[in-house]
Amino acid sequence: MKQKVLIHICCAPCSTSAVERILTLYQNPDLILFYYNPNISPLLEEKKRYGELVGFLKTSYGDRVYLERGEYDHDYWYSLVEPLKFSGEGGLRCRMCYYIRLLKTFNTAQKLNASSVTTTLATSPYKNFDWLSEIGILLSKRYGIEWFVEKWDYKRSIELSKKHGLYRQNYCGCEFSAK
Ligand code: SF4
Image (tube, rainbow, N blue to C red; front, side, top):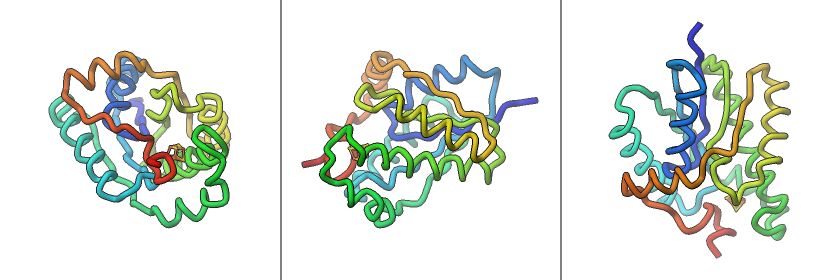
């Protein structure tokens, strides 16, 4: 049976090498890309990153992938991370941020009948890979959907981003990281 893989996408640059690799891991899968990043502030920046992704996918994959955009519920996101706002980049605030995004990702995977889930958050060496793995395993058990993740090739993502002239943001996304 054809695999239906849902990939949580944080931004176009991180998606480049991850999608390339996932296409080699699965034979001709149905790919759903789920852009859900309520952490990004301001909204204009979220839209800019989304627009960049749309352009990249169109030129690289055409109709081969299906893109779903999650709601920009920044107030909800903020209410959950606010108590952890002083923990600093890489701290517990980020762990909560991963959890919020992956929870919605699994929820969406369930609605769309996806068989496997992963995230492009694992492309960046600045993200805590162990935390991403743990959260994915926890949610995988809860939802009964396969979870897989690798440290996607960061160097390759830079190469591909340059090749496609992609906008590479200089902060992670939230108002705290922008400071
Ligand atoms: S620094 Fe990045 S991962 Fe951490 S809370 Fe902000 S947006 Fe989320």
